[in-house]
Image (tube, rainbow, N blue to C red; front, top):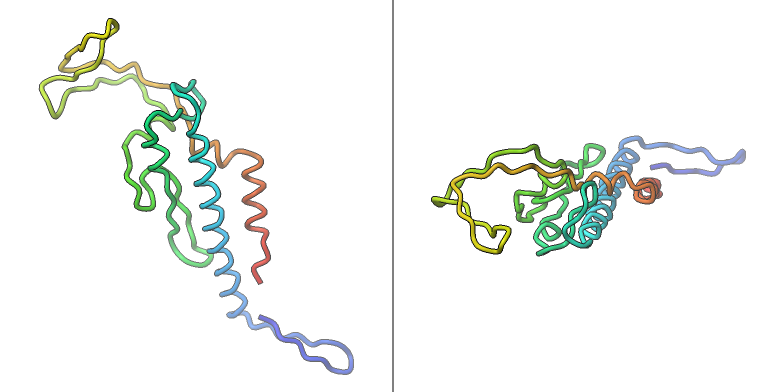
Length: 166
């Protein structure tokens, strides 16, 4: 903080570094939380498209499980504040597939684990049962990274951190 005293020649200022540092750190922490809340909302809105989504586009809305799983968490204090945003963060349940949508998957084998067989509808609508299947993999359908890369979002975050904190 600073204090000013008036003498005959103008103002003299005294800076108290510890007070100033605390105020800056508190402002940084608050702005980090504001930015996380903003990005969290943008990510949830990006998941409202139609399903199935095209490769490279955010996943479309089917049941809403993924969008309900998006949360944020603020870790640390002051200038060491970190914001985590994503699926299963901040006390939200993680459906487990957000990471696979965000980054895609390579072809892989799926093996029945909790039952004797996997069951899924076949091409003609009849149920098909298999002990394992070869999944072809999926192209990425990112929903976290694009939110941070959008120019308007970057500008908004810059405005948040540009707020007066003193």
